Image (cartoon, rainbow, N blue to C red; front, side, top):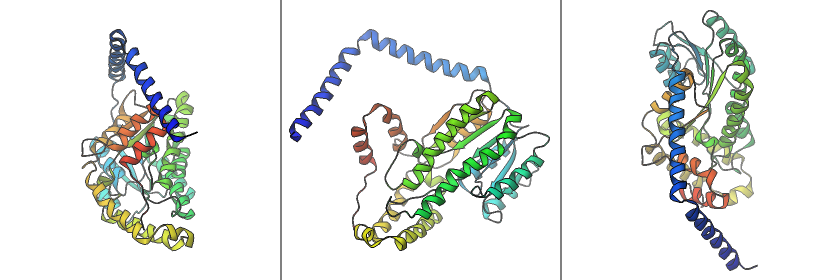
Length: 358
């Protein structure tokens, strides 16, 4: 079969599809669709208004990953709202932990927590039980995570496992540990994944697979916790890398060290395809990306707060994070369900091109 015939069939399918759409969208059909959409929007608004908002001033919330980024900002924001905050940090002696301790408030407690360690999670749980024995634990925000960049072939198995142990099994460890406390209060579990848990892009294999896993884990946990009154929400931030510090000076330095590890362990066959300059070019490309991210973390903080306080929280919160006309990730996520893979993937690669040049 010639390619001319294949392309002709492809054009024919598109043409028939457009004709079908043209004849289906009569004036009565359009009116019904617009009315249905409007009624659904009003229904959602009125449902959330009827559910109301719960106060935070008598609630205790635990947040993981408060050294920097979303977790650090959220801990301070919830504290200002009157919440009793248990902020956990990976580096108890780091600047982030010190900044939180400087709040000097009985409502701000800073605890060490390594989500990749069963022992650390168990120790944290013991402290939290004591701290929340009077008020109970209302919410857990699984925010701790490790951002990672790397080609499928270059990323080492140690790196794949390291990212998974933090991003997937860290969430699993803390969720399993604290769910009994959340059941007692019929509280909230809020899992921070990423827009990259909904759309796949080159150079993100190790990271994306953990975020896809976080989506699935959260959905199953929500269904299982429904009968106990525990509500589970997913936060899916878009392009906030520059604001969180993932790709600032320190973040790029960390990625550079991870690239060095990749290159040191790469086989001769892989090095014939890639080059050290190729990795350097990726590093240099991160700075322009940082410049396009949303300048503050406020939209994500507001989404998490809504998930903790709304009487009828959303199942998932897609939060666009670009300071340009659009967040490319979020736009692609919304288009994906409606486009065939053979059309969607070239569109994605237009926005996120991938080419190995030595």
